[in-house]
Image 1 (cartoon, rainbow, N blue to C red):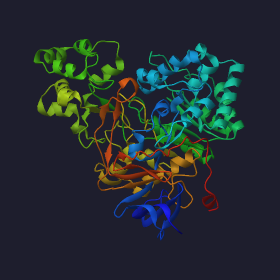
Image 2: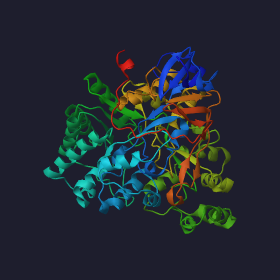
Image 3: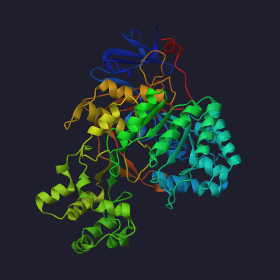
Length: 578
């Protein structure tokens, strides 16, 4: 072999297959991995990976960059955490297909469901598309740092076909159902990787209304599944409360049978139904035994709210005194809150009625934690605000108040909303070890004022493979495979997620001993100057997409090799023959 574009020398290769790590070189040329082992060829560029991990780039199957992808060339925060492929269009929300009259409807839907500022969407979206194929063309015009893949969102589809009736969740006619089926089929043929929907009561528009897809009739869902069957491709992504448990799971199975395509659904442990995940796992395993390609997407840490003065929510949002200053810039708010008279008055107030979710947070100090630096996402009960207050005799409100107003009001408290009923991650471990689950639910690009779970791929290595002290850990090859080869295969991207000859050259070079999450913080870099939570990490020596180094030690190189991926990708001939 002569000269190649890049050689990564002497790294500990964890190749995504689940096999044992090994010391090897990796040669890359023309965007593909061409040799793994002892590479004699010289690279036009070389990376000394001695003592470092070499893994495939992460394949994140649950993100919401549907707006950001049209105006931003960098898919941050995902790309700074080693993701080289992200799948958007989850949870039934997105921006195509769309009529000009419905732009605001889709923005209000995305703003409510995914907590992406409406002002940023209004300013950032060009709306140079109507059909889903047009939307794909618009994405393709913008170069990106990593690959992006998208799905047909049921909410946008329903509004496009039915107009206001669809937004108001009215039943679709036979003709409208047939049109949704046709549009889904055509979108898959144009390059959508799949179709997504939401049926949960939690997802609401910015106006507080249920999303257009909640309660959609079985006939509508089955027809859409038929659209995938006719396209001969695609996956289904499903979000549900599973309130009518048996019927809902029966419908999931029916859709897989009708479409002949894989389906994945979101699974968390919620405090209000703490054992439902066990019922879901039982049905999931039964379906797998019957040969149905159904998986559950799970997250390897709590789905955690970031409570802070810069964010969407904190315990004092509904206090009358705070509401009077909520519109002020942060510095002015903090200055007022630090005045002793104001502090005493606010702490003596009761929350205003009419905000049940926010007010439930205000008293839940047993599940409220100072996140710390480095962040601790598996805190012990004795570290909670309630425990601290009991130990010191302080008012828990006062402890929270002082944390939120410290450091110019830039700090955050951590509130583990899901996956933390027992105050540990043992149940999450059980979920992750089930062969019928997938690592997912990072929500990259979404919930920008309250949740920052986009760093989960990094956390999987630091916490589960190295740092965990409150229970069992996971093997590094298992974790790497779970967020590379397994997730790539789940959505039909068989050309990536594995370090082997012929595979797409998406690679991370990681200083595992130095790998560490930094605390989340707020930045104001969305269109219109809108806010979003950001989180960085130390220890990513290099991230490579399609053979080009896109990040070095956390800094963007300027390279933009990322592409829109249209539809499924077959395995390279050399791999398919194995």
